[in-house]
Image (tube, rainbow, N blue to C red):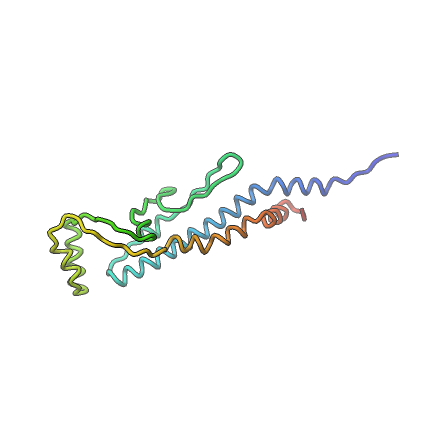
Length: 179
């Protein structure tokens, strides 16, 4: 007389459960990478509009958007923005997104730029900057929402990707079973 027991289902389920945390991280990493790509496109689009309006193009914001994924206890967290992983902090990214007032210093380089813009576009505002006796300007920057609009659009996708059932099913597939 003997007892026969099949533990293959339990073993499969245990493998799946062990694969869940790495799968959560994989899903979050995929979401954040896609979000960074969308943010870079959004920054490029905004900068293209600036090129058309101001006649100059810099891709500083686009180049300097990155992500960092850090372990914290049993979980992890993701930070998306500028000034991460060897990228430079985009000094005016927040004000360009949210709008506000800035007070740039009037320098000889700024005056030279203003003269160049005046010669190119024949707009008196550039001549005014070039000739101003002020040391600082007050610039009102309208909100563009180039960053927040992307995050708001992508947030529901994150919730879908991080749904426990979705993650469990993906972990099960990686573990080689049906869960």
